[in-house]
Amino acid sequence: MIRVLIADDQALLRGSFRLLVNSTPDFTTVGEAGNGVEAVALATEHRPDVVLMDVRMPEMDGIEATRRICRDPATAGTRVVILTTFDLDEYVYGALRAGASAFLLKDTPPADLLAGIRVVAAGEGLLAPTVTRRLIDEFARRPEPARPLPRRLEGVTEREREVLALIARGLSNAELAEQLGLSLATVKTHVGRLLTKLAVRDRAQLVIVAYETGLVAPGGLR
Image (cartoon, rainbow, N blue to C red; front, top):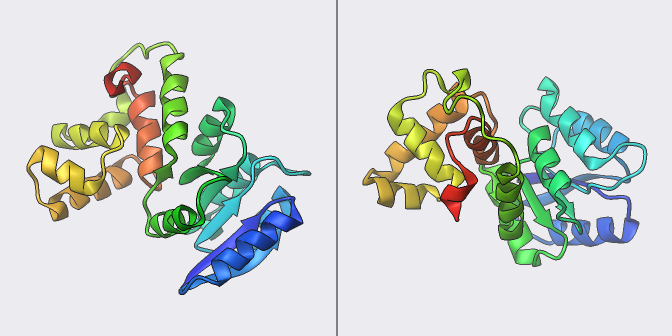
């Protein structure tokens, strides 16, 4: 059973998400929050698998709530899906830096939203296509790092760096296996080792590392 916490300051939207979640086999809602403070408290109390988190909420916004949930050892197993009507650059980058595993717009079709929850609950990361483009553009505006491979990538093998670069291009495990001529099991092993070595939660965080270390340049994805 995938346990979901819903955080949104609009009661109508919370109700809609609750009905969608509870009408889906092996999904259940464990709580609803109207602001970020409530979201953090309920996440600590119920320790859901996934939090559907709005960005603009009173008392504490969704990005700060995400940061607190993701950094608290008590909720280390909880993944956050940012849901918003806004896809502004500062929200995208801020949410991912805070530890969000996914960033989707509220007009995402219900089937795609449910599929996204499943993906995130399984430990993967998910970005809407428009969000991916904005993330790339965000890094394109930043000055290039002084060193192409800083200390954070020490201990990462050449093959793992290759895998990391392809993850930053948005390739799935199956696509990685095909491009690199590896078995799916081997690819999963490489991804797992990257998560451990770089101390990140999921693929969305690996994308951040790939850009921030200069391993991948935005121009390489165009």
